[in-house]
Each structure stands twice: as structure tokens, then as C-alpha cells.
Image (cartoon, rainbow, N blue to C red):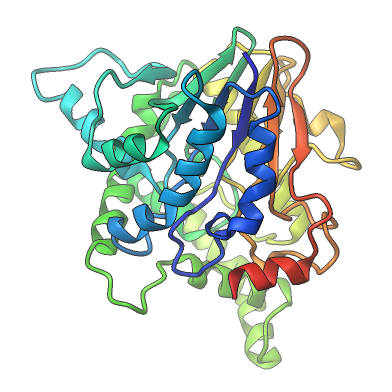
Length: 368
């Protein structure tokens, strides 16, 4: 079976960074599905459910699901693997597992045998004739290839994002992760309450709400030197290491005060490797999304993307255009959108630049 993996579409983003709401941008991806692909895996954050009401995300998602389902045909399949921004899609299923008693431990690749929500029903109807399957927290693409969104990385990543700090605070409440033999349930205890809270807020959002993403971006730009108000920035930069030290002493870390682009990349890959090791994922290749940073890229240190046990790590990138993280030169930045990973019956995963040749000007027009 040939599989195409894409992640972080964030359809319904109130920041209007979700490129696939534009028909011209969707077209190359739909064409890629017609090239012998039998299964499309949406590896987390397909919908943006933490910035506005569900109805907005469904409205934005329907054109893409309709075109993808038509391209895959009656024998094709769309596998939804929820992430942190669309965790609400799987939350009812997770809750129902606990309804009649203590459930069996959550495995690495569970498949819902029933549609857990009206949202899944609506997406399945839209995607016909292709079928829609919900898998969580990940999915086996082959015996040697496993894929998960990567929101579990927020228990390990050393970059002090709001989500990482929230995960650290919840970790203090529910307890630390096992050093070895961790299970998905160990991660869910700390992370699921955060997602439920943020999604509930979004359902009552007013027309101006865009969630916490803008706050994180402004803080990053200020601390990394891309912001305005230089006097204020110098003061914040000087105090930042002291703040991180205090956070670490409070047991919310470990975090690092380095928020450079290079450290963002290293931190994400380190966290990927740690999650693979703690969960004991027995695969030759493990695919992630979540960080929006595609990889490995030419120029990346190959050893960084391989765990001590020899597992090859991959990241499928994103389909959101975040101007603050990219230059105007296509693919100069690892955060340039429009990437995918193809997994065929044999051979290693193959990274694809689906929007090759699309300029920054065209992306800007798509989002205007």
C-alpha cells in the first residue's frame, strides 16, 4: 500500500495561515494523491480547534476532505491521527473507554471502531467515496514504519513554549513519566486536560480570538532579536535566563534559555528521540509532525535524526504559512510549508516538496 503523510494543516485557523483553504494550493496535493496513493494519513492538527468554534474548522475543512476523498476513490482511505490542536476529535472515544470500568492500557496504534463524534461523521460524509478512519495516538504504516503527531514531545522539549510550561505544570500534578516503559496513558494524563481546557475556551471565542499562538510567536521574536522596542527587548533577554532557572527550580523543566533557530531544531529532534525511546517504539522509521519543521533536510547532521538504537526519525513539516519563521526564498527555511512524506510498500520513506515552485508571493495571495 502506498501512503502519503501530511501533518499540521490547521484548517480553520483564525490566523488564516492554513494554506489548504485555497483551491490553487490544494491542487498539487490532490494531484499527488492521484499518483498511486491508496491512503492519506493526516498526522495531527488537521483541524484547528483551539482558536475558534468547531463549526468554523469544519467549514474550512470540507473542501479539502471532499477533493481528497474523490481523488482517493472508493478503495482509498483517509486516516485521521489527532494531535494537540484537534485532540477533541478523539476525546469522546478516549472518555468512552473509561465509561464501563478501567480500560486496557492505550496502545501505540488504536483504531476507533465507531465514529466518536458528529465532527468525525461530518468529515466522513464529506470525504466519500473514500472511507475515514480514526487512529490514535499513532498508526503503523508498515511493520517497520510508525507515525504519530508528536504532541507527546511537549513532555520532553526544552524550549519554553506556553504548551511546554503547561505540560510541566500538569506533570507536577500527575507525576513524572517512567524513564523506560512509558505508555501513551502516561502522556495523556498530563496533556489531555490541557487540550480539553483550551478547546472548551475556543468554543466560546469571540470574533477576534486567535488562541495563544500569537503570544508565543511575539515572545519568540522578541527574545530571538526579531522584535521591536530594542530597550525593552534587551531587558527581557537579560532577565530570561534567570526566569528559566527559576522555572527549572520549580520542577517545570528541564528547559533551556536558548531560543535560537538552531536550538529550536535540536530541541525538537532530541524530544522526538526521547519519546521514541520512552515509549519503546520498535520501528526502523518513526514519523512525526507537531514541530512544523520538516526533516531531515540536506545539511542536517544525519546522526541527529537517528536514535542511539538506530531508529530513523522523520518530520513531515506543515501546511501553514508562518511568515515570521520563513524568508521569501522557497525552501530556504525548514519551516517552509507544503511538504509530505510518501511511504510505499518497500524502501525508506521519501520526503516530498509538494509545493515546489510556488513562490512566497503566491502563498501571500492565497491567504489574503
